[in-house]
Image (cartoon, rainbow, N blue to C red; front, side):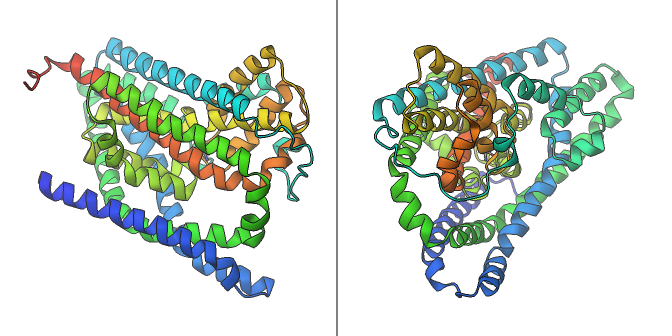
Length: 436
Ligand code: ASP
């Protein structure tokens, strides 16, 4: 594959244009689709299945890449750090960035939902009909959920962790394997080289998948919106418009002001150019509603378009896809306070603090899969004494907001990779003389 910069730029531009076109066309057709679909339930299902088929293929292909990609990039990333102190540094920086940005996004959500008050006067809101996820019917407490996240880091069976896509468990194992290999000198080197070659091969496959992504993306959007039906557009959106607006405004501020601000403060470079380089990943996140499935494309965009070093991309992005979810954190806070408002419950300042911490925890614990945030909401609701089945109030629009928050989750990881890479490069050697 050519590394000619002009060619790479043209390739990246073409992909962004195709992908953006796919989102627009997919959403437009998806919006009109409910009216075009056959009345008969069976025929309707079949039509949606066919329309969504390329999208299913895309999801399968992306997911197929996740396990090998995470293991190979993490092993290579950590092994290439060599010195364990360097590994510590990149680890602290990544975690500090995640903690700071997640905290900022929850706080932003709490402030906005208190100012806009989307739920006050909304006591008439009837919960939408629909099947509640199991976790909301039989909720787990915050402590149990936290312990479960920690337990997941040490999977008893690596193959099972792969089958269940327990990315966090695979990360922990790969980090340890990479660190140990790097201490083994000559004997470790062939194994590291194997993973390097393997990693490169996986990235080349991702290079091919990205060309199929626009077709898959259009198909995913059409099928999902078609399935939502007219009721969603005519009843649910007006019913929950103020709540949805609060979430989307919050996410918008975070992704357009807060994250670019951090990037600019650190790098003194145009953050929007950087975001443009990540555009295909952001649009894929929007269409798949899964940070984990998007991970291969996030890596590809970060490395190819934004020239993020293998080490930073390999460390920050896989970890971020599982534990750093700014969008989900903000959404958890807004949703829970909105539910409280519409039930006429006045949350005290202390309870807001509880929301702050449990929303952060819920975001860390949420898997990078569609609507995982809704499932984790039980923690936050229970912590402030609201029966979790009240999440039924926002159930009908969760799939829609999920797309926006997943996009913000991926944007958060992407900016994190840029920020951490800046410090990594600074430590690696003298910074070239600043341009006059
Ligand atoms: N779908 C989100 C993600 O994959 C998680 C969530 O439901 O908030 O990042």
